Image (tube, rainbow, N blue to C red; front, side):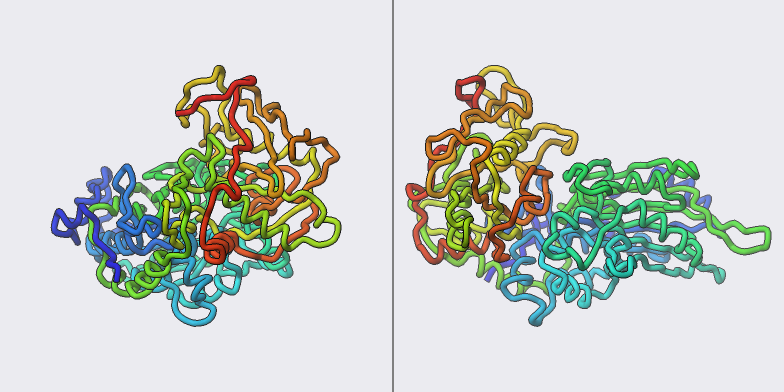
Length: 615
């Protein structure tokens, strides 16, 4: 049986909790502390908001794909169990103060632990989701819906919601028939703060409009997702009218305004700063979705001039947000108590110096052990070792394997005129760390290659569509001159208008043919839009009128990444098969993965007509 291990740092230190945990995690007394203490006196109150986001199914500091304790170059730790220790310590530190504990979404997807209890032993058929167990024990007050909450369908989401001891909030997840929120839009907490006074704090939850694209198959016709600003403008006044003295927003939307889907939707993907800027009477925003570390940021509201506090605690439980709002009592002309926010600040605590909370760890241990056994079960063998480490700069067999299995499944399911067309497939290098060893292959090897819960579809496209698609995916590369040698960083993850922080690997697709090779060069010495050279199928140049069947995932077909043609092209295959499971099933059925059956070098990076060298 596996063990949910404490971190190396906690072991070496003998484990730390309480005040020692705070000190070790980087907690510092706020710079405004002396001002706060004198200001509070008998007339003021400090409200503390503790926050997490993008936990993505992580309870333990455990990497299921590597079958060992999680580690990265920064030696971060992950998981709800670690953060729970910090939350308990902060509650003790602020004993007697009003405290809220919030999450900003993406909780039930992202690890084999989360996948297992959505698909293999689904909670819809009984049992409690491990994230529900863990978060209930932590004692969250509310959580915003993340886009990944919708990955497994509404039945799974509603079952998870029913298992929680706190509300899932989504003011902009609305019923299309009524226009009303399909989840609770907000919750109001009332705190007794001495001398008969009450402080009413409203928490508004906002999710991501991109759900309409990314999980179209699960939500189309059943739920709509208007903009964060638009819905906040509706609900913040209602919350104030109900007596909220302070309004906190938990938003699954990044702070740096941008959209990976371009103008496919009228509402931006990352809009937290826009909410702060455009919606009056928001006091602070717990930010999620972007997986960024923002200890403290202030955005000035255009209408009121208020400085709105924003904080984003990274992802996977690596950090805990500690947001402080100092409120001071005042009175209206009629003598009614009115609280005014007079100061605020935030900091992030690092979970890599503390032990996992024993109660949280124990509650999920049996489920964790079950999943560890599942992902380590052998399903076949590989003739040779294969790696995705260089998949972004050269055609590698492990990505060819994904394309082969996808295209093979689509071809077997085609009918009518589409069955006579050549079948192609797209695949992205989701995880450069993925690999198959030479010899025994396990579930976790395959799951590490395909880390998302996408389903397989196929669309009919023309030769012109194919060329446009490849030109679009070639935006992933930076413009270079000469043939190198270059490092990977010098040629990949180009900054674009829709990817201001660099195009992610998951938005770079390689395309391969099933029964004959699709070959092309990518000339990255040329400007975007003029990079695809020598596009041929079965040795013949592809012309605009040619017709193909293209295997794609549901994210692409729904418009994810903004790729051309595929979201509007006729769908010729859609059996809702999950791609990761197709890969696992193929290995199980065939027993042996032999690259000679599917691998070939079909594309390359060039400068002019010369290959580029990338180290």
